[in-house]
Image 1 (cartoon, helix red, strand yellow):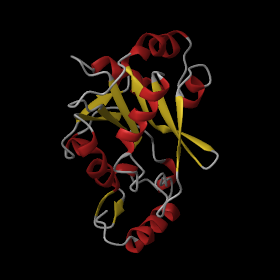
Image 2 (cartoon, helix red, strand yellow):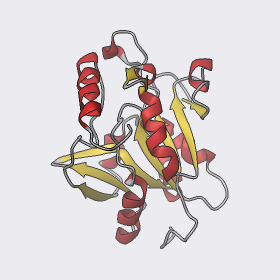
Image 3 (cartoon, helix red, strand yellow):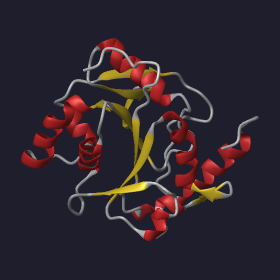
Image 4 (spheres, helix red, strand yellow):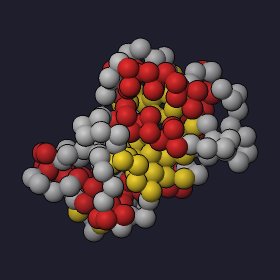
Length: 211
């Protein structure tokens, strides 16, 4: 595993967008309107400057999602889970790129320095990845992963049939980055219409920042 980032190194990025959005009243979560643009666009705008390339992890590629201009990585099978999406992204990494930033599609306030902070944490620990902890709760969808984990992930997904990130973190040691509390909550995620309405209020309360 590399011991330092290097001057030019940026991770690849993967946005998890393969959920069924069952609690959103039939609206695909990625397209839910928030402060004048789709929820997914908020995430793209915050993540894209932090990464060298950015992918969407989806259940299956679609023309609707193609409108966001990102390469879509389809799940290997239906209901494969986010761990399979992570595996597919690591398998698609080429060249000297070793790190992947993972984020969900429903976190419009995620930090603009998330990638660098997670990478610094992982490199300082000499572990093959790092995950955010906010308060007392681990946030596995906000994490970085090194390509050294590829073989272990392949075994977990293909042989052990693991599907969830927390399930894998229970057997794989990653560094933990404690994130300070800020307002709006940086890892606020939107799972239903009530949370979407509250996110709209949070957008209005932000001072001096375009969300």
